[in-house]
Image (cartoon, rainbow, N blue to C red; front, side, top):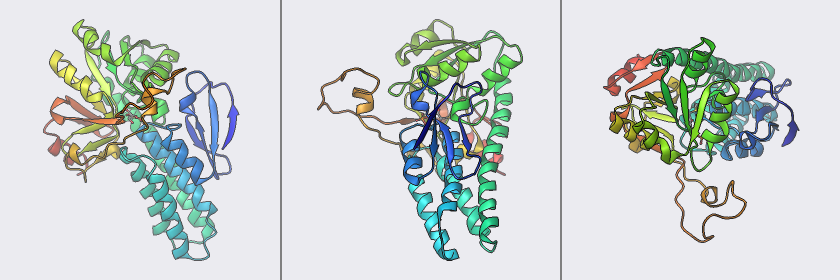
Length: 356
Ligand code: MRU
C-alpha cells in the first residue's frame, strides 16, 4: 500500500488514480491528527482498507468498492470471456465479504460486475472502459443524491435549532455534503445559524474524530458530547431534531446504523424530539423485510479494550461484545429523507412508492 502525506485544502476522500489502475483514499483512521492518502492497488489492500475502516460510511464504501472492482478488472489476464467473468466475480465476492451490514457495498459491486457481464461482446479495452464508467457513474450519482438529500433535509431545520447527530454521515462518509450532515453544510452555505451536538460514538469515535472535525472546519457551531450525555442535552431542551445516517434500511423502515443510534432514537421519542434518518435509496434493501433480516457486523473486542488507549482499559481476558451497528425500529423514526423525497409512516408503502 503506497503512502503519501499532504495538507488537505479540500476534502477529497476518495478517487480513482489518474491512470485508472488504483484507488486513492484518505485514511480515515488517522484523522483528525494526520491527513494521509493511501493508494490501493491489490485486492488485499482494498479489502483491508474497507475492513479496517480506512474508508468507511455506507455510500463511501460503495463508491470505493466500485472503483476497486474496476481497477481489479484491468489486472485480470483472462484468456477468455468466461474466465474473465469468473475471476471478476471472485474479486467482487472477496471485497463484498469485507463488511456485512452496509448494503451499498454489494449494491455497487454488483453494478460494476453487471456492467462487465452485460458488455461481454465488446473488445477488452472497450469493456474495461465501460466497467470504469459504471464506477464513475456511481460516484457522480452519489454527489447528486447527497445534494438532493441535503435540500430535503434542510427543509426540516429551523433557524436557531439544535441538531444532534451520531457517528459520521458527512462528506468523508459519502462523496460531497454527506447525508445526515448534508443539510447542515448546505444551511451554513445559505447563512443559517444552528447548533450541532455530535455524539463521540464509542468505540471507534467517528463522531469525535470525523464529525466534529468536518463541522468545526466548516465553521459550524458544533459541541462534542460523550454518547451517554445525549439524554441530558435533550432534557435541557437543546435539541430540536436528531439527524442520523443509515447503513441498511429494510422494506418496513427499520434502519441499521452505527451502534448507539437506536438508543438516541429511544431518547428522542421519550423527549418528543423528531428523529430523522437520511440516506440515498441505494441504502434501502427491499429484499430485507424487516430489521430482523439485517446482518450486524461483530468487530474485534480490542477496539473497546485497547484501541485509542495508551494501556489496556480492561482485563485482557474479559469477555467483550462489540456489534458495529444496531437497528432502530421504524416506529421511532419520524421520517426517512432520501434523494427522491421524504418518506413518512407507513414506511412499507412510502418506501415502495419511492421505487415505483
Ligand atoms: O462503521 P462505519 O463508520 O462505517 O459506520 C458508519 C455509519 O454508521 C454511518 O452513519 C452510515 O454509514 C451513514 S454514512 C452516510
